Length: 380
Image (cartoon, rainbow, N blue to C red; front, side, top):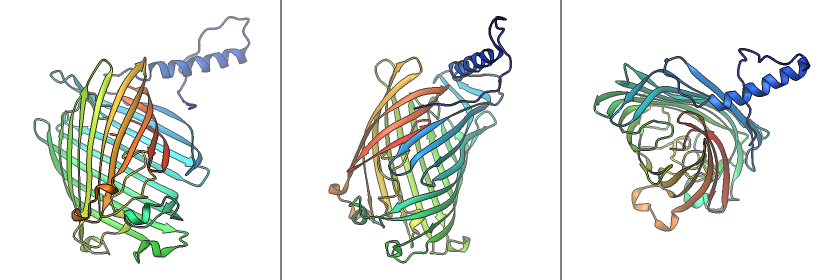
């Protein structure tokens, strides 16, 4: 993976008079890039905004050749917990990706701490233009990897939650999900089962969290339990009628032998209480869960998945990961079937770009498919 970086050059090294100006500039630029990567993971304690850029090309059979750029930053005075060897700072990531098949995404996500981490704002806001595949709704529609239609999806999403520390490591607070998505260039509308192709949703709710992780981007120990309950009433513009969404996950991180971490994640998403639009149906795949599956291929009113991952530091700032998992979608609890549980596994490379912030390259495998992922920070 070719990595590219940018950094303002503050000074030039003194060179021997026998070296040409062109060679001097080339040498200084090369040395500055090397120094940039060499020191990019050194933490700063002055509270100033510390941002770095990284990017590079990538390729997959679904999206074609692309270029992704990520700006990762930390800021604010560190909040430390000597009992748990924890050091936390506010963080933000800006990301942009464009590929030869027309896929474009631009977004920002992060965590803002207030008042010495007495409260937090978690956010993820993005826009996409995405030539996609659509199988339909439910396991039976998606089980044949070749049974899809192509369309273009435009979408905007803003997922926000403001959490107050109510004691120890417990947080609670309001959350809101604002999103719009529309299907364009549709040739087989019957796969949408009569639903509108463009849907807007607005859903406020409540979020609860227990967080004992030593950091939020590359945890090595601790537990993170989160539960959110969101409501999408009709009077707030949800045209397909009122429905609700419950999302819960538990992540556990345990050090093992030297330089290794065992990470486990259990996740479920449930929608119920009304006519749920296709844009809000739980799914898996992509860069976060069940890596290797095409995101959105399997979707239904309910979804659950589990992953166990071994993260091993190898040398200097490099590491590798191995994971195995499983997941499934189903319309209701009584329709869950073990024979419809899908396997997942993969291998990845990690490079510590900033302190506790890794460049992530994953190769994931699913049932009859695989996926290549270039991203920043751990999948969970």
